[in-house]
Image (cartoon, rainbow, N blue to C red):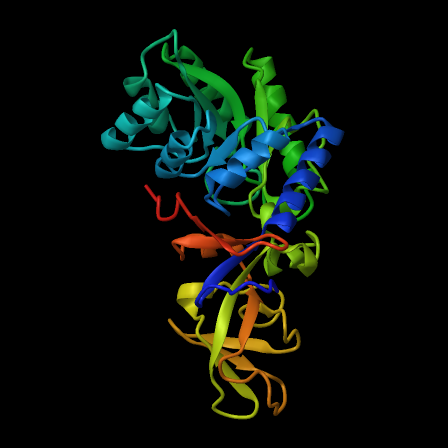
Length: 353
């Protein structure tokens, strides 16, 4: 750890060199395989890293909610895809205001959602770009068949204020071949209907380096790759050494020789589980297991009686699911070699609408 004084705990530490190396590696992979990179900001929620990705070659960014996109637009980001159905008059009014100042795109998987867009956007000289969201196995949102995709694409193309931008998916984890085959089938159906998709956009960090391969997928939207976490390591995405974010915690109790308690519970680490045991990897004690979390306590099983860690000792925890962490804290602390930790406000934190 850095020799400079560290922040009070619990606190989020980001190794900037590792994060930027993760960004650069992904961009180099995208360039090599001929697809565009549009990183999802959900993991870091920081304009700093969104801009850094664009400096490296990303064509724009992906947000999940209007609030996130508004923060990024305020910070100077100008090409944003929101991969969420936008429903309701108030949200559509915010979407119009955002559309007036940046290059914006959204998604839809129902006629009702497209009707809302068509009613709110009527300027054919400045149409709203709309993707048809397609399910490729994740069983979340998305149309189920090529015929449904064609029907929605036609509805978009027929609306004066909308532009059919292509098809979008969030694939299941695992072998990317099946989702890519489904996307190819969808693209063929749309092409035969005279609606060839200008962009085919997919996402998900687990498949970043095993796919996609152009020309099926022309744009990819990874998110967690910038920090990585135990879950991604379990999926085969890098190693724990690639993980750029950790939660700094203090040992606040040693009730028994085998048990320790840290001041990072579910409000600092979240309660997500993964293939590895426990609720996070303790860097200084890799064999220890965080067995349980209450709101403010993390309980550690050391495996055997041990004098360490002692009360007051600092430990770093690599979380199971890092994306949750950025929505639990007001700031992260940037660590750079030889420099004092720098507080960086998480500007898009809490922007869930």
